[in-house]
Length: 268
Image (tube, rainbow, N blue to C red; front, side, top):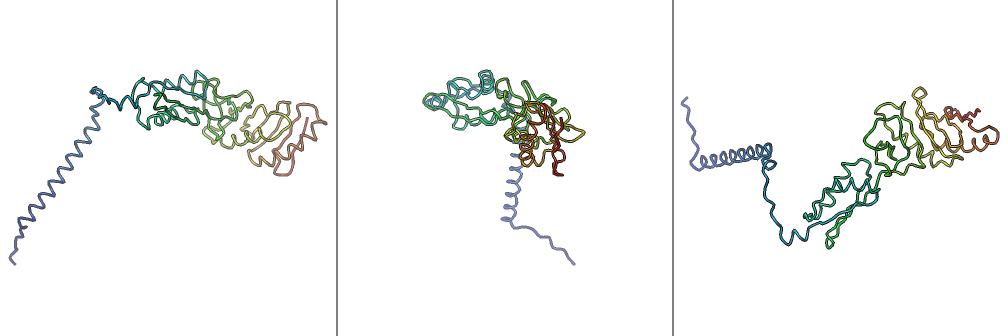
């Protein structure tokens, strides 16, 4: 059988060449963009600044201030904000720099930003993280003391940022590395608000017992056990302490490790 050679019509050949040409052009353009992004030539070339004229003056920020934290901490935050007086800030620049502070300083809970367009000033309101306890026995996370936040996160903060005078001490020397501290934070917070006759002064973790120990300001010791049944334990413990305090000398121990069996043991 004789094989017939099929040839495209001139119009079809022209259309195919056009498609191939556009595809090749697009691929070449993408290659140029990729090479340019990888080389980052703008990082090595100092481009002249282009003045914005009246718009630049309207967007200019001449000064900024940080409030909500002690002066030394505020100065560190202002340094991080790195304002060049007179530089123009777009409508979202203040919020962008507030997000930079949150990323740079883990002891911040939130940062609010506002600006005065007529006064050409920016104000940042910093809110530090709330803590439930000061922490010992944990690795340092930066300059300053280590604290346990309400959500169970450890953080360091500069002096004066966290008001820790009334907070208990939390010893994590026996705590497993990397274990979730959220249950510990909930336990500490609940005991602090539990209406006990004396203020909790310290919490420590007993790795052998896999449970917590609590010491109250009047010397009473609580063998708390695991961080569960906390509301029920607190309710029953208040009754036990009210009954035992007149009959036992200061410094007695209340053992809650057998609470699930219906027992709280009290001993001198």
